[in-house]
Each structure stands twice: as structure tokens, then as C-alpha cells.
Length: 349
Image (cartoon, rainbow, N blue to C red; front, side, top):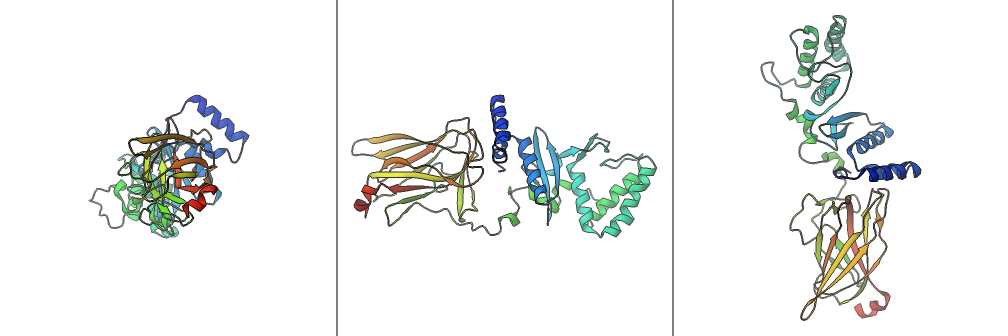
């Protein structure tokens, strides 16, 4: 889902998707997640439904979310803490009526580092005195707010006990904040997924052919619009094809030139979708034969589903090119299956 949001769409598409959402609730709600705002709201909604604490996140030109984990708070669907904030009318200072992400993260780290009684006695009491003295809440030390500044310093000591008072503290590089730098998902969430090397195309004894979606021969490596990732479905890898992404597969030598029924396992979270286009180039004696096909993409409500079979003709060294006409939304694909037509089974065996 983290990749399913970087798209542009017309106002008409907005209205159609939101109309579909409310007239087909709850299954229609998934297809509205093409923009960062609805996507972040739905993410917080799902976390709260399972009792997981969340904190809203605003970022320049973007909306994200954060939630609690056993190893600390994690930002999802967005950039790092240092560019994050959330509406908080009690706060003043540089970010008026907004609380910065590093300030929120520092408080969560301080609370997790010490016992609740110690936090109350040494930190909450300072905050109470600051309230009595009329010092407004802020997220930076200020000379004219003595008690509030003491509370901030005490919180920093709790969160970073090994940092001396003479050292500059870089909250954004804190090890406890390592989730939103690098991999898009924390490692604990990948536990149990068997991440295997990319599989190659397999020819079954029945004559069928399995093409793992991540085993493409072109492009030579993943890109922004062609992404491979670990798969929860049967382990291994899967393909994420975004917007104008194109992938090619070359069938092995030794297979007969005949008719197959092609289908693929995919996930689609958008109601408005364009077909998956298939171009097949089969080498002949003097020239190549090129055929064009269209595979309908259904709204699967975020679940894996197999497309309706499409009748195709391929042979040894045929090249299968899958593409989509922009503008379109991202699509996750597990594999493509080619099953020989019934009248071809005897010939293939």
C-alpha cells in the first residue's frame, strides 16, 4: 500500500471514486486510497480498529501516519520525523498550533525509557510548574520560559541518557528513529516471509507454463515503475507495476508453438482501472509474428484474484510484453499461468 499513492487524477475521478466508496461500503472504501489524505486516514482507522495507537502526520505537500510498535513509534506512507508535524493548538513557538514530529518522538522515547513514577516526579512536575507560571507549550528551549525549558531538557536526558549536556542532539538520526530511513517496512513485519531468489519460468509436466511476475528479462533491473518485493502469498517475490511500467518475459526453448489460456494472479485496490496490455512477438523463419491482447483488470478489494483466461498463441522464444496505458494506478502481480487448450494436451504430452 505504501506505493499506491503517488498518482495524479482528475476531479471527476475523485468524485466517481468517493461516490463508489459510499454506495458500496465497506468494499468500496479501498479504491479511494489513491491520494495521501484518504490513504493516511484509512491507515489510522485500521490501526485503531485493532487497538494500535496512532498519531497523525502532516508533511510538505503530503499526508502520512504513524503508529506504535513494540520497538518504538514508526512513520508509514511518508518521509522522516524531521519533516513531520500535526495540529496541536496548545503549542507555540516556531511551529504555532503545530507539534513537530521530533518533539512527539522524543516524548515517546522518554516515556518508554523510565518508569511512570519517575517520569511523573521529575518531568511532569516541571511541566505543571510551567503551566502555573503561564509558560505556553513549545518544542524548543526558550530563555524566557525557564520551567518549560527545564522540562524539555529533562525529557531529552531520559530519551538520550548517553548524550552529555554539551553535545548537540540530532533527533532525526536517533537509533530509535531508524524505521523511516532505508527499508519501507520494519524488519519485524517481514518475519515469516520466505524471501527466496527470483524464480525462473517453469514448464510443468502437464504442458502448462508458470511465469513468476518478478522474473522479467526487461528492464534489466527494477525501477520506480517496476518494483519487486517480498510476497506474503506463498513466499518468494511479486511484481508491482506502476503507471507506465513495462515488463518483458522470454519463453524457454523447447516448448511447442500452440494455443494457451493465459491468466494471472493480481491485486487491485482501485475501482477505476485500465486493462493490462499484452504484446506477443514470436520469431518465425523469416520474420516475427506480433499479436496484441487485452487483459481485463478487476477491482479485487485488496485481495489476490485470478483474471479471466485469455486465449493466446506462443512458441519457443516468444517474448511476452506486458504494459499499461497511462494514466493508471499501481498493480501487484504474483505470476502468469499458461494452460494448454484441451485439444493440445495430447500433443504436448
